[in-house]
Image (cartoon, rainbow, N blue to C red):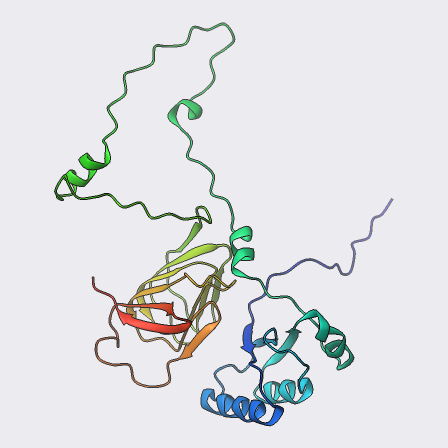
Length: 279
């Protein structure tokens, strides 16, 4: 009996999209601000999908006018995230409603890191009835003070433990650079890139981003809303950097202490901060 292969199927997908965050304002000032921002960025976001974030609004706004401006700039509107009371209005206007992940969602979606396998668990099992071999003596485990002393620090120096209430996070390592047009997304993980991130390339991570090489493309950390995420690079010359949706297009010459120098990008009081990195 012959079997037929389905011609199509629906499957879940995780897509990266630019997020346009709207603040409460009258329609005309809002549209004017959007026009200006799109003019400032030129064709930088051309071809990018975009989600309109209207969660801060209390009343519906001019959805069609906003979407038209975005489409004229070459962007594709995926949907609109808004309070539940506005969603019927959005659907009547012909747009899809979407939900945006929060920092708590990001923690819940992180892939768990399995505990390390001990030597006792990794050896083969003896046949039933076999006598267990004697347990070899173990070397004493160094205490924090001894570890600090071995590192060349005085014994009295405190050993500070940095808590991580969200649990361990996986790390994805890319042992090569990226060419223009290539995109890498580390879902639920930090991302380490060893090599050049060329102009036109994109690196995205739910956690931190480390680039051991020149960062000349786009780098977006904390993609699912983790505001504690950071970007580190040994040579900063990026087109765009972003943390938790707060982005900066680097369209002006960087100062000498940042241009092609080691740098760190992070959020500080809700704003993006780019500072030299001492190495």
